[in-house]
Length: 183
Image (cartoon, rainbow, N blue to C red; front, side, top):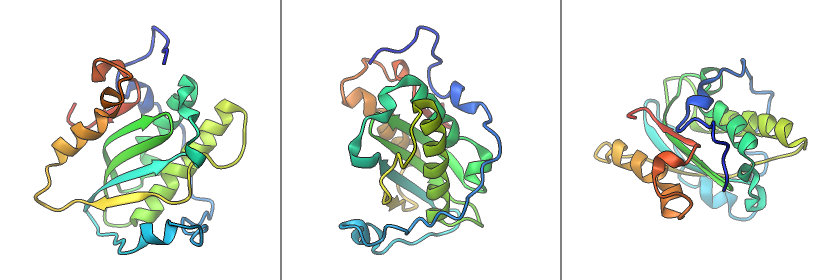
Protein backbone atom coordinates (compact mmCIF):
# COMPACT_ATOMS: atom_id res chain seq x y z
CA UNK A 1 0.00 0.00 0.00
CA UNK A 2 1.18 3.50 -0.76
CA UNK A 3 0.23 6.41 1.49
CA UNK A 4 0.70 10.12 0.90
CA UNK A 5 3.85 11.57 2.50
CA UNK A 6 1.68 13.91 4.53
CA UNK A 7 -0.45 11.29 6.28
CA UNK A 8 -0.67 11.46 10.04
CA UNK A 9 0.41 8.34 11.91
CA UNK A 10 -2.22 6.91 14.20
CA UNK A 11 -5.59 8.50 14.39
CA UNK A 12 -4.95 12.22 14.31
CA UNK A 13 -6.93 12.41 11.10
CA UNK A 14 -9.78 10.56 12.79
CA UNK A 15 -10.25 13.19 15.49
CA UNK A 16 -11.90 15.58 13.07
CA UNK A 17 -15.57 15.95 13.94
CA UNK A 18 -17.87 14.95 11.11
CA UNK A 19 -21.00 16.30 12.70
CA UNK A 20 -23.76 14.65 14.64
CA UNK A 21 -24.96 11.54 12.86
CA UNK A 22 -27.97 9.73 14.11
CA UNK A 23 -29.44 6.28 13.83
CA UNK A 24 -32.09 6.42 11.10
CA UNK A 25 -34.03 3.39 12.22
CA UNK A 26 -31.62 0.80 10.81
CA UNK A 27 -32.22 -2.53 12.51
CA UNK A 28 -28.92 -4.29 13.36
CA UNK A 29 -30.76 -7.62 13.20
CA UNK A 30 -32.35 -6.93 9.81
CA UNK A 31 -30.44 -9.73 8.12
CA UNK A 32 -30.92 -12.22 10.93
CA UNK A 33 -31.77 -15.11 8.59
CA UNK A 34 -28.49 -15.11 6.66
CA UNK A 35 -26.47 -18.31 7.19
CA UNK A 36 -24.06 -18.04 10.10
CA UNK A 37 -25.50 -14.82 11.48
CA UNK A 38 -27.70 -16.64 13.99
CA UNK A 39 -24.63 -18.37 15.42
CA UNK A 40 -22.86 -15.02 15.85
CA UNK A 41 -25.73 -13.73 17.98
CA UNK A 42 -26.08 -16.88 20.07
CA UNK A 43 -25.31 -16.02 23.66
CA UNK A 44 -24.70 -12.32 22.87
CA UNK A 45 -25.16 -10.24 25.99
CA UNK A 46 -24.83 -6.49 26.26
CA UNK A 47 -23.60 -5.53 29.73
CA UNK A 48 -23.28 -1.88 30.77
CA UNK A 49 -19.67 -0.73 31.33
CA UNK A 50 -18.29 -3.99 29.95
CA UNK A 51 -15.50 -4.06 27.35
CA UNK A 52 -15.98 -5.88 24.05
CA UNK A 53 -13.67 -6.83 21.21
CA UNK A 54 -15.62 -6.47 17.96
CA UNK A 55 -14.64 -7.68 14.50
CA UNK A 56 -16.62 -6.40 11.52
CA UNK A 57 -15.86 -7.49 7.96
CA UNK A 58 -16.61 -5.64 4.76
CA UNK A 59 -19.26 -6.89 2.40
CA UNK A 60 -17.89 -9.98 0.65
CA UNK A 61 -14.47 -9.04 2.10
CA UNK A 62 -14.09 -6.28 -0.49
CA UNK A 63 -10.99 -4.16 0.13
CA UNK A 64 -12.75 -0.79 0.31
CA UNK A 65 -10.13 0.67 2.61
CA UNK A 66 -7.20 0.14 0.26
CA UNK A 67 -8.32 3.61 -0.83
CA UNK A 68 -6.58 5.99 1.61
CA UNK A 69 -9.37 8.60 1.55
CA UNK A 70 -12.01 5.92 2.15
CA UNK A 71 -9.99 4.71 5.14
CA UNK A 72 -9.74 8.25 6.50
CA UNK A 73 -13.49 8.78 6.18
CA UNK A 74 -14.29 5.55 8.03
CA UNK A 75 -11.64 6.15 10.69
CA UNK A 76 -13.15 9.54 11.59
CA UNK A 77 -16.34 7.76 12.60
CA UNK A 78 -14.62 5.45 15.06
CA UNK A 79 -13.84 8.25 17.49
CA UNK A 80 -16.81 10.50 16.88
CA UNK A 81 -18.59 11.03 20.21
CA UNK A 82 -21.95 11.61 18.53
CA UNK A 83 -21.67 8.14 16.97
CA UNK A 84 -20.29 6.38 20.05
CA UNK A 85 -22.96 7.77 22.35
CA UNK A 86 -22.03 6.85 25.90
CA UNK A 87 -19.66 4.09 24.77
CA UNK A 88 -15.90 4.64 24.76
CA UNK A 89 -13.57 3.53 21.96
CA UNK A 90 -10.49 2.08 23.69
CA UNK A 91 -8.62 0.95 20.56
CA UNK A 92 -9.30 0.24 16.91
CA UNK A 93 -7.64 -0.79 13.68
CA UNK A 94 -9.06 -0.51 10.18
CA UNK A 95 -7.74 -3.03 7.69
CA UNK A 96 -8.60 -3.06 3.95
CA UNK A 97 -11.44 -5.58 4.45
CA UNK A 98 -12.28 -5.52 8.17
CA UNK A 99 -12.09 -3.56 11.40
CA UNK A 100 -11.43 -4.40 15.03
CA UNK A 101 -12.91 -2.20 17.75
CA UNK A 102 -12.17 -2.46 21.45
CA UNK A 103 -15.20 -0.77 23.00
CA UNK A 104 -16.38 -0.15 26.50
CA UNK A 105 -20.12 0.30 26.75
CA UNK A 106 -21.66 3.01 28.86
CA UNK A 107 -24.88 2.79 30.83
CA UNK A 108 -27.41 3.54 28.07
CA UNK A 109 -26.60 2.06 24.67
CA UNK A 110 -26.57 -1.65 23.97
CA UNK A 111 -23.73 -3.24 22.00
CA UNK A 112 -25.82 -3.85 18.87
CA UNK A 113 -26.86 -0.17 18.79
CA UNK A 114 -23.28 1.12 19.08
CA UNK A 115 -21.96 -1.30 16.46
CA UNK A 116 -24.83 -0.43 14.13
CA UNK A 117 -24.06 3.29 14.44
CA UNK A 118 -20.34 2.68 13.76
CA UNK A 119 -21.07 0.55 10.71
CA UNK A 120 -23.82 2.73 9.24
CA UNK A 121 -21.99 6.04 9.73
CA UNK A 122 -18.71 4.72 8.36
CA UNK A 123 -20.62 3.23 5.39
CA UNK A 124 -22.19 6.62 4.61
CA UNK A 125 -18.86 8.45 4.84
CA UNK A 126 -16.98 5.82 2.82
CA UNK A 127 -19.67 5.72 0.15
CA UNK A 128 -19.36 9.49 -0.31
CA UNK A 129 -15.63 9.16 -0.93
CA UNK A 130 -15.96 6.17 -3.25
CA UNK A 131 -19.00 7.64 -5.07
CA UNK A 132 -21.02 4.51 -4.44
CA UNK A 133 -24.07 3.49 -2.47
CA UNK A 134 -25.04 0.43 -0.53
CA UNK A 135 -23.59 -1.42 2.36
CA UNK A 136 -19.88 -1.44 3.13
CA UNK A 137 -20.09 -3.91 6.02
CA UNK A 138 -21.49 -7.41 6.39
CA UNK A 139 -24.64 -7.23 8.54
CA UNK A 140 -23.22 -9.52 11.24
CA UNK A 141 -20.16 -9.04 13.43
CA UNK A 142 -18.19 -11.07 15.92
CA UNK A 143 -18.01 -9.91 19.51
CA UNK A 144 -16.08 -11.12 22.54
CA UNK A 145 -17.12 -9.84 25.95
CA UNK A 146 -13.93 -9.37 27.92
CA UNK A 147 -13.63 -10.84 31.38
CA UNK A 148 -12.31 -8.71 34.22
CA UNK A 149 -8.99 -10.58 34.26
CA UNK A 150 -8.29 -10.02 30.56
CA UNK A 151 -5.68 -7.35 29.98
CA UNK A 152 -7.15 -4.55 27.87
CA UNK A 153 -3.77 -3.07 26.98
CA UNK A 154 -2.46 -6.39 25.62
CA UNK A 155 -5.65 -6.88 23.61
CA UNK A 156 -5.28 -3.35 22.23
CA UNK A 157 -1.65 -4.07 21.28
CA UNK A 158 -2.74 -7.24 19.54
CA UNK A 159 -5.39 -5.56 17.41
CA UNK A 160 -3.30 -2.55 16.42
CA UNK A 161 -0.44 -4.87 15.42
CA UNK A 162 -2.70 -6.43 12.77
CA UNK A 163 -0.98 -4.59 9.90
CA UNK A 164 2.43 -5.65 11.20
CA UNK A 165 1.43 -9.33 11.36
CA UNK A 166 -0.02 -9.04 7.84
CA UNK A 167 3.40 -7.89 6.63
CA UNK A 168 2.19 -4.56 5.25
CA UNK A 169 4.46 -2.44 7.41
CA UNK A 170 7.69 -2.93 9.34
CA UNK A 171 6.59 -0.66 12.20
CA UNK A 172 3.08 -0.20 13.59
CA UNK A 173 3.57 3.56 13.38
CA UNK A 174 3.85 3.28 9.60
CA UNK A 175 0.22 2.13 9.29
CA UNK A 176 -2.22 5.06 9.36
CA UNK A 177 -5.51 3.49 10.47
CA UNK A 178 -5.35 2.70 14.17
CA UNK A 179 -5.51 4.26 17.59
CA UNK A 180 -5.57 3.33 21.26
CA UNK A 181 -6.28 5.49 24.30
CA UNK A 182 -2.99 4.35 25.86
CA UNK A 183 -0.83 5.79 23.07
